[in-house]
Each structure stands twice: as structure tokens, then as C-alpha cells.
Length: 187
Length: 279
Image (cartoon, rainbow over all chains, first blue to last red; front, side):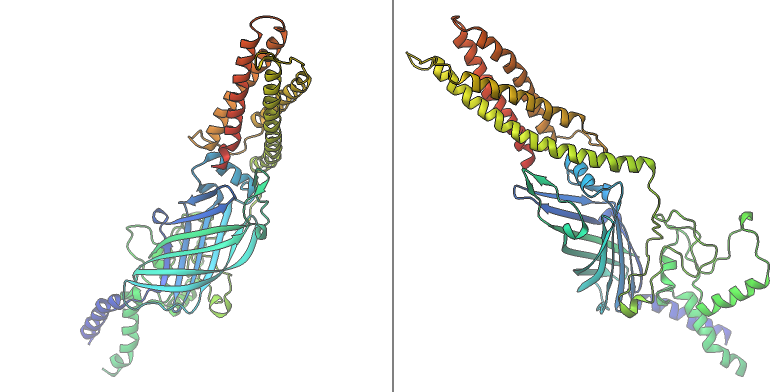
């Protein structure tokens, strides 16, 4: 009988991983992930990219929790002066982190892979010492049960985060700061 | 045999829980993910068994923490995650760096932390100094920008009036040589020089709280153009005074022409430097 139980257990152990769900905690792969901002001035646009992100996502059933953290100092616009100015503007010494936390509810987790799922992230963004709620559309590309590629774009108000908008030629940059997230998660 | 039948389902569940981590609960999965690379996966233990182990452990006196004896692994990771500066608690069912909150399932609660504790910490003196310098720099460069644009306007006016002055003195076969633009040109020129010097000082001596590596960017273009404009300004000061001193001499026109050309060149360099940031 003991032998029979061991055989059954062994068979189940072989079968179950094949039908494993995507549930679990996914860690962000910083080498394949970017978070960027775009600010617009009447005369030109500026894009800063951060490639040194930290993040994780916990998936359980139809709900996912996501948390991303970026250092303000790690955003690179390709212009050292502009980056320094950005740090001054958002008071990087006082508020070095940008943190995004969110929950995706009613997530239709695919049973076969690859599969693409659209969802909405309901969360909060902490930036410049201010935490505001955000809602962002998210596209989740499940390449397997163990890997998800998430993309999202949304705008945040700089005034809403009490950022004194920089000006050039007496013209301030637009209030809307466009955020683009391109994130690769893996178990 | 009956005894075996009664224990069979329990044993099977136990065996499945041990053998199939993919079927483990979401609370248990984070533990598996945080194993060090290449390490053998820890056994996932059912919550009931964890409790039973804890109860058993309570019977024995716990070793003092300073002995360095590792806590029994109950499914937690031995190492704190990379992002967590604080050491992991001795015994936890899940590591502190990965705590999906069950409360979030109920109402979108953000009371979870997947990255480890982010305790607000006191700013160091160096960070506070940087913050203060950044404020000073921002104010300084705002004034620098305003003063620079004003100086550019003054320079344009100086060049324009200088052109009128040149035409009054030297244009045509019978110039009027009334001298009506001379005073205006001189006043504007010295105002421009003063504004340029003050603006340059503000830019040069503004504190630099953040490193700015030299790159081929708009800032470098601004600095190069303003460097050329500075040379032009210094030349103009000398040439302007010298031109005025050559009144009645035969070479005054040629000196004035050089003064004129350098004046326009300086205006071009300064305009380019100011507009460099637009790109």
C-alpha cells in the first residue's frame, strides 16, 4: 500500500507542474524593464528613462498586486544638465524614490500561453513625497505561466504632486507628465 | 489495512504538497521565488504543519540570538532580498519582502509590501546640504536665465544702435557724422557688458549639487557659445574704446568695421547659446 501511495504521489508530482497556474510572486527583471517619463515644453519634449527598477507582482486567482520602485537619480534623459535640473525640480535629495503600488482585480488569467490580457491597475503613485491614486490601463502578455510582460501608459499631473514646473523662456512645461512602463516579470 | 485507508488521503495530500510546488498556495509561492539562484528549493510546508512545528519548537528553549544559530526553516528564505537593508526576522511564514496582503483582496487595499520595508529615514547632513544647494541653484539659474535674456536684448539693441552710429559716421560719400547715436550706443554697450558679466557669474558660481558629466549636449553647446560670446564681449570693450579714441584718424573706419563685425558675431553666438536649450 505504501508503494501504491508513493507511485500515485509521484505521478501527481509529474502531472501537476504541467497544469500549474500563473499564481505566485513574479520578480521584476531590471535588465528587461524600463520606466520612462516624458515632459512637454512648447519648444521641445524631453524623455527620461530608468533602467534600474525594482519590482514584484503577486498573482493570486483573479487578482494581482504590483509594486514598482524607481530611484529618481536613475532617470537618464541623455542630457546631464537636464537630468540635474530634473533632480533639483523634484527635490531628489529629499524624495529619492518613486513608488507605484497597485492592484488589478478581475484579472482573466489565461490557461494557455502565450496569451495577452488587458486590465486596469487601480493603485497609488508616490512621487515627490506625495501619494495620489491612479488608474492605468495595463496590457499583460503572459508568455508562459512563469513570465509576464506588462506595458502601461498614463499621465500624471505635476501640479498634483506639488512639483514646481520648470520653465524655459518664461514658459513652463506642461502639467501632464506622460509615464510609460515596460516591465518584464518572471517567477 | 483499515488504518492505512484512513491515512491514505492525508498522506496523499501531504505528498502532493511536498512534491508539487506549482499547486501550492499563493502565500507559499513567494517563498519559493526568493530562493537564492541555484539553491535547491525549500520544501513547502502546509500551514497546519507550520503551526505544529511552531508549537513543538516552543517546548524547547530557544537559543539566544547571538549564538548565530539559524532559525529552523519553515518555508522562509534564509536571506533577505536584495532591496531589503534590514535582516529578515528569525521565523516567519513568508519573508518580509514578499507579503501579498489578503486584505487587498477585499477592497483594493494598498497595505502590502512586495519589496521589503521602506522605512522613512532621517536625511543625512550631506543630503540636506544637497537639497539646500539645489534650492539655491534653482533660484540662481532662474535669475541667470532672466538676466541672460535681458542681456541678449540689450546686446541686440547695442548692435543695432552701433550700426546706426556707424552709418552716421561712415556711410555714403558724405556722412552726416552728427554723433547722435554715440551716447546711446555707449550706455547700451556698458549696460550689456555689465549684464553679461553678472549673468555669467551667476551661471559660473551657482552651486552644483548633482554631478553633471560633460557630454555633447545642449549644455555643452550653451557653454561653448557663451565662451565665444565672452571673447567677443572682451574684444568689443577694447575695440569700442579704441575706435572712439581714433576720432579724426584715418584708420577709425577700419577699426570700426572690425568692431562692427565682432559685435554682430557676438550677438550670433549669444543668441545661439540662449537658444541651445530649446533643442
